[in-house]
Amino acid sequence: EIVLSVSDLTASVDGTPILKGVNLEVKAGEIHAIMGPNGSGKSTFSKILAGHPAYEVTGGEVIFQGQNLLEMEPEDRARSGVFLAFQYPLEIPGVSNLDFLRVAYNSKRKAQGLEELEPFDFEDLVHEKLDVVKMDSAFLNRSVNEGFSGGEKKRNEILQMALLEPKIAILDETDSGLDIDALKIVAGGVNQLANPQNATIMITHYQRLLDYIIPDYVHVMARGQILMCGGKELALELESRGYDWILEQDFETV
Ligand code: ADP
Ligand code: MG
Ligand code: MG
Image (cartoon, rainbow, N blue to C red; front, side, top):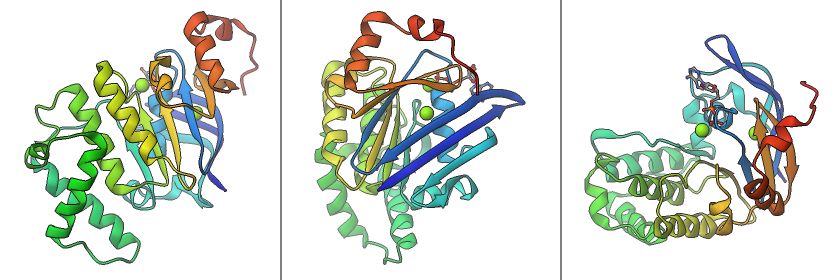
């Protein structure tokens, strides 16, 4: 079952081309890693999948579960099972984490034709999911991400993911800024949530995360394209050789 199919995707910001023909196919049950140097378009790619308005898609196609993803509103993408964990999670002062999670969760249920979950039942569910990320319930009553440490923000992203049970989760540098204990917790959460029906795309700078989450495929994005694909061993090769040997190869621009 193909979950996500990206063909020749090109995109610009303020008229500057950033993505220059991205191709990627993700099937159910797969974990993909996208690595690559800074500024190569990884975050841009993930934001475009989520429907961020700052990026203009100038060509190509993205099919999500048979639907044209690029024609869907960002809210509809989320409700239908696309989840993006941001590199820099947003703080939302004045909105409690619990309320935020409940609204997001119920909005997804509604899209599935289900009744809203009663507040008490929702709290039970949230407490179950808190265990996945080993988070204290005190975080539920604080404003979304406000004053959270880097590691707490990332765990909070995985908590959202655990509740929403997306069809495809895109994790943008979820490992950056994490100490080793937080990294293990976040990776454990991702592993626990991955199953044969869903798919995961992990964007990461370092091979470190991939010691804990074993990808089926590793892609190298550079200069707005995926220039190379391999198995999990490619991540180790990148760790020891860097990216220059790939960039130095003479690739035809699409
Ligand atoms: P990566 O995540 O691989 O480090 P990004 O997708 O963040 O790369 O950025 C790719 C390129 O696009 C960079 O040169 C960056 O400066 C540019 N870019 C990304 N977002 C914007 C934006 N909102 N405005 C202007 N330039 C941007
Ligand atoms: Mg890509
Ligand atoms: Mg980035």
